[in-house]
Image (cartoon, rainbow, N blue to C red; front, side):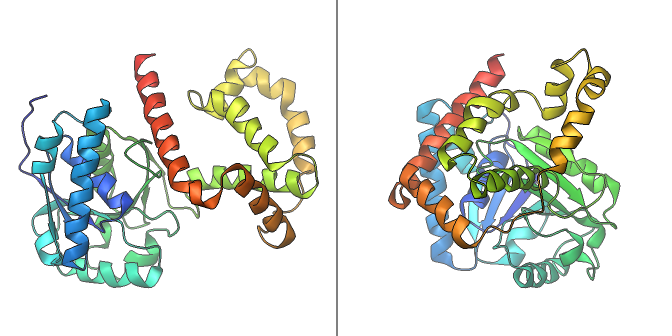
Length: 315
């Protein structure tokens, strides 16, 4: 698996699951990766866990990138010094907790440490980039690169510019994502929820209504996706699905637009995920997957995603 190591440096801010996944992805193609966290013991733990995970995916034959586990880990170091982490980095991927005050404070610090060529990318799934970059000297370099959890097994990355992000940084971020094996999409402008969560929320909202109205059980609703729509959506998006389900998209619209509109009009207001329905959904979900079985089920999910990714490559 020999391949050349790169000289360029990438900084990962935050050493949790998402941060470690990003570190592995960049190290997979030879970037020199520095993982930063605020406490030395946390950094040391993250490095140990990253080493074990790299060895595990290599043993399973599912390691990503062009280097061996040992070669990849040799590209990764850790620090509890923010300046040390980001100095000379071409790209910074921020993975701190989803609190706007924490992000604003961090980006204020980063603003005084980076030069004019470093891309500052956030993993946030919640905040539009303008919310934590407006007052920065280097705000033109800030964008969102939102992964899907877990990013090592699910390749989508949403690249979202702030109104003042320069296009060359958005373009470069997309090129980097492609280089490390992710599948980037670029939004033309920032929008609440980006794309993935807006679509995900639409699905969640309708499943919630179907439970609240007593139409389907929680288990059966999930079967609709896992054994129905999800089977197609693993390979095709909803628009190509429609295109193939008729004689092209215009024919689909001609056939079904009135029906789709009429049914959609019956869906009602957006529900709030709280109260008795939340208790009912939680009860049924915990019968399906008890709380103490969540880590085991997540490991099963990751294994399934890995196998699905391998299958998609062979088709």
